[in-house]
Image (cartoon, rainbow, N blue to C red; front, side, top):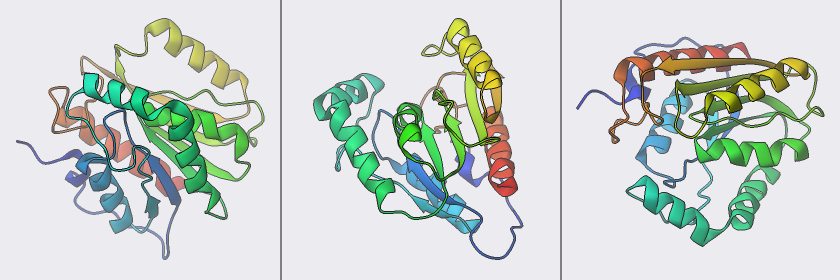
Length: 206
């Protein structure tokens, strides 16, 4: 199996001290090695990263089981745990989400005034008009994506362009929805490496 996408970049040079305080919300599968690997890689680059377990220890092996697990846990519990996690953090944070995690970011954005940036993989989050001016937002999405049809993507782009945030959306042609996860059939090493490179660059600019 190819190297995981978080290990592709061999050397990154950062300024002294943590560059960002990141809260990373997991996908519908739950908190798995892929999210923990991303967090470890970011910590190695000087960031502080928190990975709340929104399923309280449970995880799924298939996307179908993941949706069933999300329904079992319930959206109020999922967002409540996420809210509790960021409520304990002071200062500006980067809200990051993987797939379902993007929806968690969307739920929390209106409630958190101090946001350094928003980073999304495999999902989109509506950006409210109340966020600060020039809030950096970066999103990575398959093109096409089975969960985000072209009309929805166009609507998101138009809304973001009309709002206060400064957003960029990177589309990756002819890949599966979860193209950064080396444990899934969707995995595409070239697209994953490019998404990682762009994400590292985004965080380095904050």
